[in-house]
Image 1 (cartoon, rainbow, N blue to C red):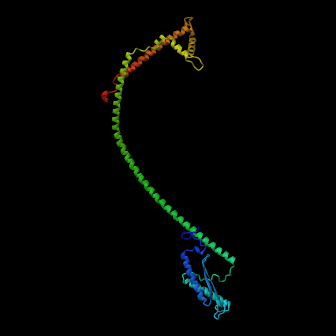
Image 2 (cartoon, rainbow, N blue to C red; image 1 turned 90 degrees about the vertical axis):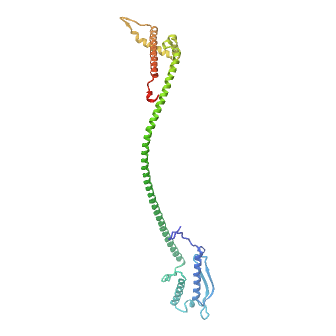
Length: 346
């Protein structure tokens, strides 16, 4: 799209019908003035018709008339040359009529040039005239393109200037907001420090109260545990004592062996087989027992019975010691005085 110097699109006028009503009225007045001027310059013409043409690119007038001399003859050369018979006189008459037409149009407000644009130039043929018109049209289009580019550049410069101004305004606004945020952050830090100091002071008092409440609750639980232990000890005193391991094995010595024979491992052997293998290996190690010069070796069955009797006795003793330790620990836990009742209000 082509733009004019003001940045407005250039409307391409292809026929007179594309003209605005104001332009048509203006040109119509000029055409009427031109017709009147031609009639004034040729008062002896017998005019056949006058026609205005609006159906082409440029509006114009066609006038047809009969050139009559003063004595009633038809003679175009004599009428157009103002009665002179020389070529120079005819050319001077022709230029005079054109000058008078231009002066009349200027008087009507039309900028008609007075330059002799064809003086000294050879008349162009139709083809050459078309080429010249095309050249002039291309130059005009190129000039419009240049003006369009210049207008575009000016518009872009204005846009960039507006953007730069907007960026500067935003930068100032961001800086102002940053300063406000920094002030708010400083004030918040001061307030946070004040609140923290108050919280520490309040927290110490609140923490002491919570600690005292927790200690009192723990002491109450301890009293409940002491009472529960006493109740359980009373119940335990009422039931018969449990038999020791030694007593269980003495009552049913075959129970352990039976259980070990039922317990099998991955290779299919039983736990009793592994026990017997270990005991036989232990018996083989002790086959060098001696009393003086004589070597004593008990049969395996006798040696195993003696070893099991010793083991059962040791197990019973260990079990009895464990029970005594548990009872002593229970008595220690059940004694009051682990918490200071006077201090914690128990």
